[in-house]
Image (tube, rainbow, N blue to C red; front, side, top):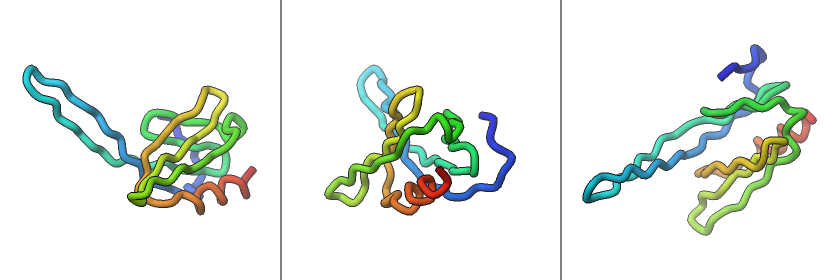
Length: 97
């Protein structure tokens, strides 16, 4: 991924769940990654978006305390499972816009 040369403004962590099917079993692999907000871009483990291509961000909490963080872009909506409330990250993004 090509990342911005500017400094990170805000960061949130998200979980990625991968299910691996074997002959007789299924295994679940969980990895933790970060979403970095820069002054001009947002980068994840797999994607980088210019801020002008990001329409909005939203959050849907679960009763367990975790939730889904939604990144609305010109390429579609990307969903990330987060353990903490991303309200400060979203507020920082809106202040940059």
